[in-house]
Amino acid sequence: MARIAVVGSGYVGLTTGACLARLGHSVTCADVDVDKVARLRGGGLPVHEPDLDGIVASACAAGRLRFTDDPAAGVDGAEFVYLCLPTPRRADGSDDLSSVTTAARTIGPHLEPGAVVVTKSTVPVGPSHRVVEALGRADVAVVSNPEFLCEGAAVADFLRPDRVVVGSTDRSAARRVAALHAPDGVPVVLTDPVSAETTKYVSNAFLATRLSFCNGIAALCEAVGDDVDDVLCGMGHDRRIGHDFLRPGPGWGGSCFPKETDALLAIAADHGFDFRLLRHAVEANREQFDRVVDKVTALAGGSVAGVRIAAWGLTFKADTDDLRGSPATEIVRRLADAGATVCAYDPTVRRPPRGLDVEIADDPYAACEGARFLVVLTEWDELRDADLGKVAELLAARNVVDARNLLDRDELRRLGFTYRGIGRS
Image (cartoon, rainbow, N blue to C red):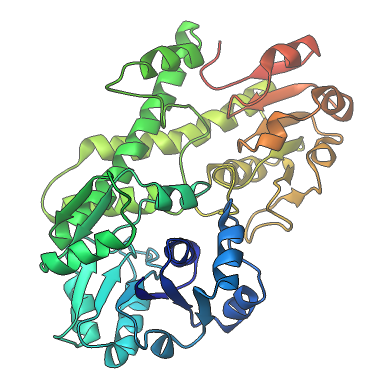
């Protein structure tokens, strides 16, 4: 059992700390947000993530997980200190590292000699030296251990990872960090800090490119009269390709893909390389938002001005409450800007997101009352299982644009709906 401190108790920090406690380590999660810490101590979670609440509760009950609003006190006696702070984009597209460097300066004087500081925050490739400088300690090791957590499956991703990547000039420290949570048989990549950070960026950039490719295939299928589901199913059975991240949709988003693809493009440009393939993947994603809006506009006869629309889903994907970079909110925004009145339902959203002109319904059926169109934007299971007959009775006109190919199109057509999916003739 190791003594571990996690600085930052957001999505990454809380998942990291709770799962390390689940593995038997003694963990203290520290955060300067006093209200968040009070909520955690009371059993509440600041994020929606399947299975995380149970792990936090059991680890706290076992005495292996604690919370504090004093990071300096939180690192006292810790052998390993994880930095899990936000690194948001500035207006110029660069990453703001102020939270990371401020935390490092705060905890530096309080670290145990020989402690290992682990950066899990996504930082720009190269400047890991800033953490070393901010700590001001020559007697501690600094290790990069990027997170590969998929929202909605973060607990499983941490406890059963595809690989563990650790970068450091101190190989002994890197091995010790890997040993904390790498299950037997899982590949461990020990490398330098820059390569570890780059691995994080290029992994997400590849997945984003893959999704843009799928949406391009979907557009092609619509043009030639194919069915994208059958095409991608046949494609995915090729063992060199596989089925993961091989589904069309309204576009990709979230807190990682947009931020990290833009960052990788900037890194490439700074070094004189025009990463055209990735640049076109990003452009194609923006075009996908327009394709969904265009489907609704075409069904409305060329304009959605004054049209009431029901939107199912606002988060960027199911099983999360994360609205950052959400294709759903971007599409709703474009519909509202074109003059539509949008009433949305999402199981994790109780009030209109800031800056978004949208009504919020208490359930999926309430959103449909009097609407001329239903637009499906997030793949929540409860929406997949909705009573389509009831939906048909509530809508003012039976039109569906299913940007997730979530609903039973045969049943919709039987009920008299005009149906438009993604990549479906």
